[in-house]
Amino acid sequence: MWVIPGQNQTRVSEFILLGFSSDPTINSTLFIMFLLIYLSSVMGNGLIILLICLDSHLHTPMYFFLCILAMLDMGYVTTTMPQMLVHLLVHSKTISFAGCWMQMYVFSALAATECTLFVVMAYDRYVAICHPLHYTVILNWGLCIWLAAVSYACGFLSALLHTFFTMSLPYCGPNKVNHYFCEGPSVRNLACMDTHFTEMVDQILNVLLGLAPISLIVASYVHIAQAILKIKSTKGRCKAFSTCASHLTVVSLFFGPSSYNYLRPHSSYSSEQDKQIALFYNVFTALLNPMVYSLRNKDIKRAFLKVLGHHKVDC
Image (cartoon, rainbow, N blue to C red; front, top):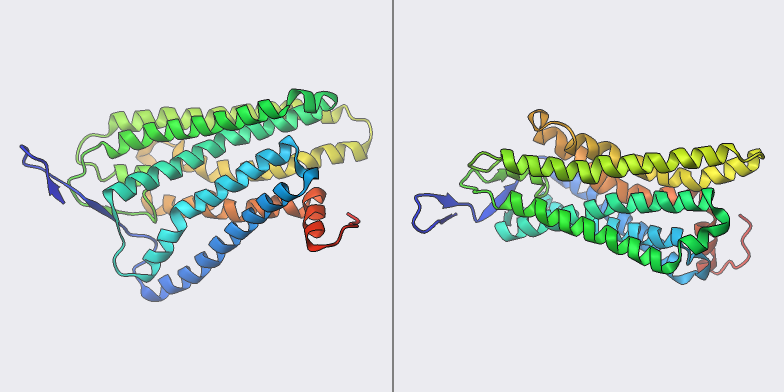
Protein backbone atom coordinates (compact mmCIF):
# COMPACT_ATOMS: atom_id res chain seq x y z
CA MET A 1 0.00 0.00 0.00
CA TRP A 2 1.01 3.63 -0.42
CA VAL A 3 0.06 6.76 1.51
CA ILE A 4 -1.63 9.65 -0.30
CA PRO A 5 0.43 12.86 0.31
CA GLY A 6 -1.35 15.35 2.57
CA GLN A 7 -3.99 12.83 3.60
CA ASN A 8 -4.15 10.34 6.42
CA GLN A 9 -5.21 7.59 4.04
CA THR A 10 -3.51 4.66 2.37
CA ARG A 11 -4.21 3.27 -1.07
CA VAL A 12 -3.73 -0.35 -2.10
CA SER A 13 -0.94 -0.97 -4.63
CA GLU A 14 -2.06 -4.51 -5.45
CA PHE A 15 -5.02 -6.85 -5.16
CA ILE A 16 -5.21 -10.50 -4.14
CA LEU A 17 -7.40 -12.67 -6.39
CA LEU A 18 -8.91 -15.41 -4.22
CA GLY A 19 -9.90 -17.64 -7.14
CA PHE A 20 -11.87 -20.81 -6.49
CA SER A 21 -10.07 -22.66 -3.73
CA SER A 22 -7.11 -22.52 -1.35
CA ASP A 23 -6.73 -26.31 -1.34
CA PRO A 24 -3.58 -27.30 -3.34
CA THR A 25 -5.09 -30.64 -4.40
CA ILE A 26 -8.26 -29.04 -5.75
CA ASN A 27 -6.20 -26.33 -7.45
CA SER A 28 -4.04 -28.94 -9.20
CA THR A 29 -7.16 -30.63 -10.57
CA LEU A 30 -8.61 -27.29 -11.65
CA PHE A 31 -5.32 -26.37 -13.30
CA ILE A 32 -5.38 -29.46 -15.55
CA MET A 33 -9.06 -28.96 -16.41
CA PHE A 34 -8.76 -25.24 -17.19
CA LEU A 35 -5.51 -25.71 -19.10
CA LEU A 36 -7.21 -28.20 -21.41
CA ILE A 37 -10.20 -25.86 -21.82
CA TYR A 38 -7.94 -22.89 -22.58
CA LEU A 39 -5.84 -24.77 -25.14
CA SER A 40 -8.96 -26.18 -26.79
CA SER A 41 -10.53 -22.70 -26.95
CA VAL A 42 -7.46 -21.12 -28.52
CA MET A 43 -6.96 -23.96 -31.01
CA GLY A 44 -10.66 -24.15 -31.92
CA ASN A 45 -11.04 -20.43 -32.54
CA GLY A 46 -7.63 -20.28 -34.21
CA LEU A 47 -8.72 -23.03 -36.60
CA ILE A 48 -11.90 -21.14 -37.48
CA ILE A 49 -9.84 -18.02 -38.28
CA LEU A 50 -7.34 -20.05 -40.33
CA LEU A 51 -10.03 -21.79 -42.39
CA ILE A 52 -11.86 -18.56 -43.14
CA CYS A 53 -8.62 -16.85 -44.21
CA LEU A 54 -7.45 -19.75 -46.41
CA ASP A 55 -10.71 -20.68 -48.17
CA SER A 56 -11.93 -18.07 -50.67
CA HIS A 57 -15.44 -19.60 -50.54
CA LEU A 58 -15.68 -18.35 -46.94
CA HIS A 59 -14.86 -14.75 -47.87
CA THR A 60 -18.43 -13.60 -47.28
CA PRO A 61 -19.92 -11.16 -44.72
CA MET A 62 -21.22 -13.99 -42.52
CA TYR A 63 -17.78 -15.59 -42.16
CA PHE A 64 -16.05 -12.22 -41.90
CA PHE A 65 -18.07 -11.51 -38.74
CA LEU A 66 -17.53 -15.08 -37.52
CA CYS A 67 -13.78 -14.56 -37.90
CA ILE A 68 -14.00 -11.41 -35.76
CA LEU A 69 -16.03 -13.33 -33.15
CA ALA A 70 -13.34 -16.03 -33.01
CA MET A 71 -10.63 -13.37 -32.52
CA LEU A 72 -12.65 -11.77 -29.72
CA ASP A 73 -13.11 -15.14 -28.02
CA MET A 74 -9.38 -15.85 -28.19
CA GLY A 75 -8.60 -12.48 -26.66
CA TYR A 76 -11.40 -12.90 -24.14
CA VAL A 77 -10.03 -16.09 -22.58
CA THR A 78 -6.39 -15.01 -22.90
CA THR A 79 -7.13 -11.90 -20.83
CA THR A 80 -8.13 -13.97 -17.80
CA MET A 81 -7.16 -17.63 -18.04
CA PRO A 82 -3.33 -17.58 -18.21
CA GLN A 83 -3.18 -15.60 -14.99
CA MET A 84 -5.80 -17.84 -13.38
CA LEU A 85 -3.72 -20.91 -14.34
CA VAL A 86 -0.61 -19.38 -12.75
CA HIS A 87 -2.53 -18.54 -9.56
CA LEU A 88 -3.73 -22.15 -9.32
CA LEU A 89 -0.11 -23.28 -8.99
CA VAL A 90 1.59 -20.57 -6.94
CA HIS A 91 1.04 -19.36 -3.40
CA SER A 92 1.06 -15.66 -4.25
CA LYS A 93 -2.13 -14.62 -6.06
CA THR A 94 -1.50 -10.91 -6.35
CA ILE A 95 -2.04 -8.55 -9.25
CA SER A 96 -0.75 -4.98 -9.33
CA PHE A 97 -3.18 -2.06 -9.32
CA ALA A 98 -2.12 -1.17 -12.88
CA GLY A 99 -2.41 -4.83 -13.95
CA CYS A 100 -5.92 -5.00 -12.49
CA TRP A 101 -6.83 -1.77 -14.32
CA MET A 102 -5.61 -3.15 -17.63
CA GLN A 103 -7.21 -6.59 -17.19
CA MET A 104 -10.57 -5.04 -16.32
CA TYR A 105 -10.39 -2.70 -19.30
CA VAL A 106 -9.40 -5.32 -21.90
CA PHE A 107 -11.92 -7.87 -20.59
CA SER A 108 -14.75 -5.31 -20.55
CA ALA A 109 -13.79 -3.98 -24.00
CA LEU A 110 -13.81 -7.41 -25.64
CA ALA A 111 -17.07 -8.39 -23.89
CA ALA A 112 -18.81 -5.17 -24.91
CA THR A 113 -17.52 -5.50 -28.48
CA GLU A 114 -18.91 -9.03 -28.62
CA CYS A 115 -22.32 -7.78 -27.45
CA THR A 116 -22.41 -5.28 -30.32
CA LEU A 117 -21.05 -7.81 -32.83
CA PHE A 118 -23.92 -10.21 -32.06
CA VAL A 119 -26.33 -7.49 -33.21
CA VAL A 120 -24.34 -7.08 -36.43
CA MET A 121 -24.42 -10.85 -36.99
CA ALA A 122 -28.20 -10.86 -36.45
CA TYR A 123 -28.51 -8.09 -39.04
CA ASP A 124 -26.41 -10.19 -41.44
CA ARG A 125 -28.86 -13.09 -41.05
CA TYR A 126 -31.81 -10.72 -41.45
CA VAL A 127 -30.50 -9.41 -44.78
CA ALA A 128 -29.53 -12.91 -45.99
CA ILE A 129 -33.01 -14.35 -45.35
CA CYS A 130 -35.33 -11.37 -45.82
CA HIS A 131 -33.47 -9.79 -48.77
CA PRO A 132 -31.46 -12.65 -50.32
CA LEU A 133 -31.29 -11.15 -53.83
CA HIS A 134 -29.76 -7.92 -52.49
CA TYR A 135 -27.53 -9.53 -49.85
CA THR A 136 -24.16 -8.71 -51.40
CA VAL A 137 -25.36 -5.26 -52.46
CA ILE A 138 -26.62 -4.26 -48.99
CA LEU A 139 -23.81 -5.95 -47.04
CA ASN A 140 -20.93 -4.80 -49.22
CA TRP A 141 -17.40 -4.94 -47.84
CA GLY A 142 -17.37 -1.24 -47.05
CA LEU A 143 -20.41 -1.62 -44.79
CA CYS A 144 -19.02 -4.81 -43.21
CA ILE A 145 -15.78 -3.08 -42.24
CA TRP A 146 -17.71 -0.06 -40.95
CA LEU A 147 -20.00 -2.27 -38.81
CA ALA A 148 -16.97 -4.10 -37.39
CA ALA A 149 -15.24 -0.79 -36.61
CA VAL A 150 -18.37 0.55 -34.87
CA SER A 151 -18.58 -2.63 -32.79
CA TYR A 152 -14.99 -2.19 -31.61
CA ALA A 153 -15.47 1.54 -30.98
CA CYS A 154 -18.60 0.97 -28.87
CA GLY A 155 -16.90 -1.81 -26.92
CA PHE A 156 -13.64 -0.04 -26.15
CA LEU A 157 -15.21 3.35 -25.34
CA SER A 158 -17.84 1.89 -22.99
CA ALA A 159 -15.14 -0.23 -21.31
CA LEU A 160 -13.04 2.89 -20.80
CA LEU A 161 -15.92 4.56 -18.94
CA HIS A 162 -16.61 1.47 -16.83
CA THR A 163 -12.95 0.94 -15.91
CA PHE A 164 -12.23 4.62 -15.26
CA PHE A 165 -15.14 5.06 -12.84
CA THR A 166 -14.44 1.75 -11.08
CA MET A 167 -10.69 2.13 -10.66
CA SER A 168 -10.90 5.84 -9.76
CA LEU A 169 -12.62 4.90 -6.50
CA PRO A 170 -10.40 4.99 -3.40
CA TYR A 171 -9.25 1.52 -2.30
CA CYS A 172 -7.83 1.71 1.23
CA GLY A 173 -7.97 -1.97 2.15
CA PRO A 174 -8.89 -4.83 2.36
CA ASN A 175 -7.55 -5.83 -1.04
CA LYS A 176 -8.86 -9.39 -1.45
CA VAL A 177 -11.01 -9.78 -4.57
CA ASN A 178 -13.35 -12.76 -4.39
CA HIS A 179 -12.95 -13.64 -8.05
CA TYR A 180 -10.46 -15.25 -10.46
CA PHE A 181 -9.90 -11.99 -12.36
CA CYS A 182 -10.43 -8.24 -11.85
CA GLU A 183 -14.13 -8.13 -12.57
CA GLY A 184 -15.77 -4.73 -12.05
CA PRO A 185 -18.39 -5.37 -9.32
CA SER A 186 -16.04 -7.64 -7.33
CA VAL A 187 -13.34 -4.96 -7.24
CA ARG A 188 -15.82 -2.13 -6.64
CA ASN A 189 -17.06 -3.85 -3.48
CA LEU A 190 -13.67 -3.11 -1.88
CA ALA A 191 -13.91 0.68 -2.34
CA CYS A 192 -13.78 2.71 0.88
CA MET A 193 -16.46 5.21 -0.14
CA ASP A 194 -20.03 5.23 -1.39
CA THR A 195 -20.19 3.65 -4.88
CA HIS A 196 -23.76 4.62 -5.78
CA PHE A 197 -22.75 6.90 -8.68
CA THR A 198 -20.38 4.30 -10.16
CA GLU A 199 -23.07 1.64 -9.86
CA MET A 200 -25.52 3.93 -11.68
CA VAL A 201 -23.03 4.50 -14.53
CA ASP A 202 -22.48 0.73 -14.77
CA GLN A 203 -26.23 0.06 -14.88
CA ILE A 204 -26.66 2.54 -17.75
CA LEU A 205 -23.80 0.87 -19.65
CA ASN A 206 -25.20 -2.58 -18.90
CA VAL A 207 -28.61 -1.59 -20.30
CA LEU A 208 -27.05 -0.05 -23.42
CA LEU A 209 -24.81 -3.09 -24.03
CA GLY A 210 -27.16 -5.75 -22.65
CA LEU A 211 -30.85 -5.01 -23.07
CA ALA A 212 -30.43 -2.90 -26.21
CA PRO A 213 -28.52 -5.61 -28.18
CA ILE A 214 -30.92 -8.31 -26.99
CA SER A 215 -33.91 -6.21 -28.11
CA LEU A 216 -32.37 -5.59 -31.55
CA ILE A 217 -31.51 -9.29 -31.96
CA VAL A 218 -35.07 -10.30 -31.01
CA ALA A 219 -36.49 -7.74 -33.46
CA SER A 220 -34.27 -9.13 -36.23
CA TYR A 221 -35.38 -12.69 -35.58
CA VAL A 222 -39.05 -11.72 -35.48
CA HIS A 223 -38.67 -10.49 -39.08
CA ILE A 224 -36.58 -13.56 -39.95
CA ALA A 225 -39.24 -15.91 -38.53
CA GLN A 226 -41.93 -14.14 -40.55
CA ALA A 227 -39.84 -14.52 -43.70
CA ILE A 228 -39.15 -18.21 -43.03
CA LEU A 229 -42.86 -18.95 -42.50
CA LYS A 230 -43.58 -17.53 -45.96
CA ILE A 231 -41.27 -20.12 -47.57
CA LYS A 232 -43.52 -22.81 -49.05
CA SER A 233 -41.18 -25.81 -49.08
CA THR A 234 -40.27 -27.58 -45.85
CA LYS A 235 -36.72 -28.09 -47.09
CA GLY A 236 -36.39 -24.37 -47.76
CA ARG A 237 -37.63 -23.51 -44.27
CA CYS A 238 -35.21 -25.94 -42.64
CA LYS A 239 -32.28 -24.60 -44.66
CA ALA A 240 -33.15 -20.99 -43.77
CA PHE A 241 -33.55 -21.82 -40.08
CA SER A 242 -30.30 -23.81 -39.96
CA THR A 243 -28.34 -20.73 -41.03
CA CYS A 244 -29.65 -18.94 -37.91
CA ALA A 245 -29.50 -21.81 -35.39
CA SER A 246 -25.76 -21.44 -34.69
CA HIS A 247 -26.04 -17.71 -34.08
CA LEU A 248 -29.05 -18.13 -31.77
CA THR A 249 -27.22 -20.82 -29.78
CA VAL A 250 -24.10 -18.68 -29.32
CA VAL A 251 -26.15 -15.60 -28.38
CA SER A 252 -28.04 -17.62 -25.74
CA LEU A 253 -24.81 -19.05 -24.28
CA PHE A 254 -23.32 -15.56 -23.95
CA PHE A 255 -26.24 -13.33 -23.00
CA GLY A 256 -27.94 -15.81 -20.64
CA PRO A 257 -25.33 -15.91 -17.85
CA SER A 258 -23.89 -12.43 -18.50
CA SER A 259 -27.35 -10.82 -18.26
CA TYR A 260 -27.91 -12.56 -14.93
CA ASN A 261 -24.63 -11.20 -13.60
CA TYR A 262 -24.85 -7.62 -14.84
CA LEU A 263 -28.52 -6.71 -15.30
CA ARG A 264 -29.88 -7.66 -11.89
CA PRO A 265 -29.97 -5.22 -8.92
CA HIS A 266 -26.69 -4.65 -7.08
CA SER A 267 -28.35 -5.62 -3.79
CA SER A 268 -28.60 -9.25 -4.95
CA TYR A 269 -24.92 -9.42 -6.01
CA SER A 270 -22.97 -12.46 -4.72
CA SER A 271 -19.26 -12.73 -5.52
CA GLU A 272 -19.12 -16.47 -4.81
CA GLN A 273 -21.99 -17.27 -7.14
CA ASP A 274 -21.12 -14.73 -9.81
CA LYS A 275 -17.53 -15.87 -10.33
CA GLN A 276 -18.89 -19.34 -11.11
CA ILE A 277 -21.43 -17.91 -13.56
CA ALA A 278 -18.65 -15.80 -15.11
CA LEU A 279 -16.99 -19.04 -16.21
CA PHE A 280 -19.85 -19.68 -18.63
CA TYR A 281 -19.70 -16.40 -20.58
CA ASN A 282 -15.92 -16.02 -20.22
CA VAL A 283 -14.54 -19.56 -20.56
CA PHE A 284 -17.14 -21.98 -21.87
CA THR A 285 -18.60 -19.77 -24.63
CA ALA A 286 -15.13 -19.42 -26.16
CA LEU A 287 -14.78 -23.21 -26.01
CA LEU A 288 -18.24 -23.98 -27.41
CA ASN A 289 -18.52 -21.33 -30.15
CA PRO A 290 -16.17 -23.11 -32.61
CA MET A 291 -18.05 -26.38 -31.99
CA VAL A 292 -21.45 -24.75 -32.54
CA TYR A 293 -20.36 -23.10 -35.78
CA SER A 294 -18.54 -26.15 -37.17
CA LEU A 295 -20.63 -29.20 -36.25
CA ARG A 296 -23.63 -28.27 -38.45
CA ASN A 297 -21.83 -26.03 -40.94
CA LYS A 298 -21.07 -27.68 -44.26
CA ASP A 299 -18.90 -24.80 -45.48
CA ILE A 300 -16.60 -25.04 -42.45
CA LYS A 301 -16.41 -28.84 -42.79
CA ARG A 302 -15.63 -28.53 -46.48
CA ALA A 303 -12.88 -25.97 -45.83
CA PHE A 304 -11.38 -28.17 -43.09
CA LEU A 305 -11.29 -31.27 -45.28
CA LYS A 306 -9.87 -29.20 -48.14
CA VAL A 307 -6.99 -28.08 -45.92
CA LEU A 308 -6.37 -31.72 -45.01
CA GLY A 309 -6.07 -32.53 -48.70
CA HIS A 310 -9.53 -33.97 -49.40
CA HIS A 311 -10.58 -31.73 -52.28
CA LYS A 312 -13.74 -33.65 -53.16
CA VAL A 313 -16.05 -33.46 -50.19
CA ASP A 314 -19.55 -34.90 -50.03
CA CYS A 315 -21.35 -32.94 -47.32
